Length: 342
Image (cartoon, rainbow, N blue to C red; front, top):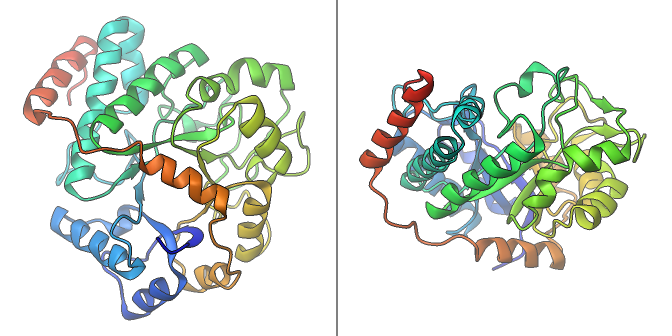
């Protein structure tokens, strides 16, 4: 494997144009991420994934997606099933713990089967953030649970279901976005909770799932830890909290650096995240000029990042046998317990 650029890029549309193909061949990013703008129908998605991997020259270049369910699902009706949100599944768990756990794992296994069909191999799920009464609404319904304890149980079940289907899960948004009262897509949230409270609640799900292969950082300032820089650009948060206190030594990617929570040029944002300790950086909007700024930095995966990446690859295997029709029928039966169809 040649050492790739420490970046994961988006693309503009449902197929690559000549400029994108040339750029991706020259830049050689680690991988790519898909959004709704890139998706029309199954054969088109498979063709796009093949194009992206051909540009990288690596048949196993990771292809990411955010297929959570509810408000965040890039693959949706009518081509694909309407996936219940993690919040709905948490509600089932509230009513019946065993049924909720089974439903979460089944739902993740069904998502994995869909992604595997499309040759997508990384899903940015589960969301382990622990919501509070004043959490911003952009997080509502997206979190694995409504408490640290529930997030641990249902987050692990999600990871298990995805891995059983050959898909790498990404735990997010480490070390915890749940207390944010603003949306990091549009502004930089500041969290004033004490370090002790953060460790007891927000960090707990990530610590419990610290052996996950991949994690995604949060564009959030934790004033009690580093009052100047968001976690994604803070070496204090990355090294002392994520790596040491939480104990996560897997492959760490930043959240999307196109978000308005961050300042500076794209190359500055890219460098800030890598300097803080991320292994790779997400740039999602498909803007070729911005991606070119990042590519000109010439920053490749370093030796530690490459080791973590390869360790993550070794965690994913050929999907286990699974009857999709039976799985969906059982999930439907479970969701009927709370009056939800699937």
